[in-house]
Image 1 (spheres, rainbow, N blue to C red):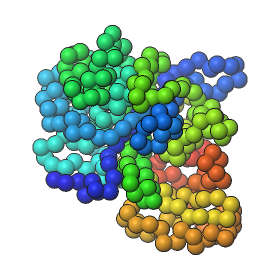
Image 2: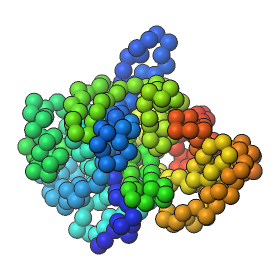
Image 3: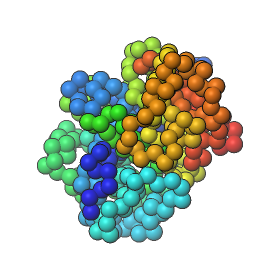
Length: 358
């Protein structure tokens, strides 16, 4: 079966990796840091941007051979089925193409895990005796011959499944938490991605081994620290990263985040495809639930009202709407987030109003 939107965009998956960390200074609020990296200048999509590890979906991620792989390692079918049972919103990316393909809720996790290994050498595995316990924290395995494996998987001369078969390990699909789903806006016609974001929580920072062709440099920093570097124009964060880091920035404790992610894991992900409106003093991107978000949006059409409010300021435009879910851009490095209603899918509030959720 040909995927419905295959000619319009590619499917991909990203991994938001959080690791416990002692505060660098005594007044630091956070007890964790986030892993991101800067793309190289020759990267085809968003060169020089700072992103979470992740990349395009590959046919190996959906191989039915994974089913026998899990079975041979005594991973129960009920444990795998538990990953696939989600009650909330399901964008098209989560729909499995056919009965002979691995369920998308599993294969997208495998994609995120594979890409994190290819790009940064982070290999998250689960111990067989702990698979049923679902402790909530992932474990990273260090490899002696990581260079060779990264290169082979990156070049397609070996598969991610072959790596785990050789090591006798199981990729940790169980302790990845579905976090969100983003689609590149329609204006970027030549290169669009629908991306499933997953959250991984670790008790300590793993060793990082950056792949030189894709990774210029990597960072461990707090959500607020990364956002501050973005505002100071020391780095540039892609829009989904600024949104996700902003809602993470309001939670300082990694254990609290892990509990929240586990509780929210099966509540689904509304597709977040920003729609642009021009303003006299910047640009507005509205998201689902905002009064300006197009009804029954097909994710393909240009916004016919792009310049409808172009002579008005962002504040004037904002005051005309009752329901807000938008990101207002003054420029590439300065954004403001507005949400005056409950977050979609019982998620974290982008402005930090999380008393009922944490």
